[in-house]
Length: 267
Image (tube, rainbow, N blue to C red; front, top):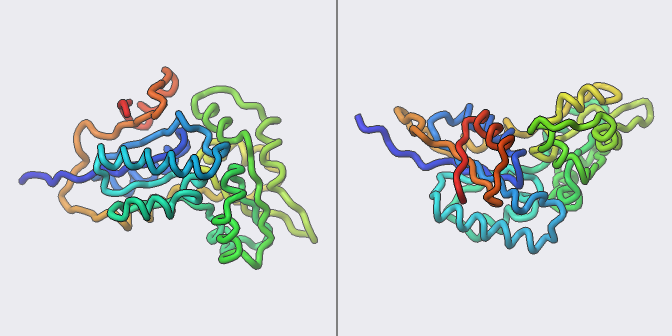
């Protein structure tokens, strides 16, 4: 019996943070090939002017969709999707996009103290999309938005094996912890796909235990719901590769990609 040829799943992030989503998506969609796109030439997205970043994302996805014909595109970046998700769906109406947004709704459902912090990039913090999520799902909570200028870079360095000081990490996460009226922050939303790489460091340095909410599994589940399960299909041989838009991949990054089972391809 001839196995059906399945279209791949495309996962894009500004850097390597989206590997946290890729890891979960692979578990749920083992029959699919994956293309991981790191837009490292544009990293970090948080410093971009909004219209320029939207234009960049539309052009980049246009090239990727035309070249690779994916079944679905996962935008594994809060900053990118909260800014350009609607524009992407409007420009590519025949493509299914699964986005990444701050996990504010599940945080509001879980919190016992009512004190929730959202640890994000400055771009995600300032987005109206994020504030609309708070208004819609967490209006009964006190939600503190914490925009870190440095954690995405620090997370990339950490996963590549470079040292990151405890003091530097603590300076970024300390604003997340609030004590008020005998209550304490009990949930911190990790609203950047890079941050889960440092989750164990966060837990060790936190002034008290909290639930660090990683959205990767929920994103993967949503993608699985959108992708038809073809019975009898098997993972294609020789698939699963990574594209770096800069075209410059150092040895450490190559080794990291190999650890995730990804070959390096040119864009």
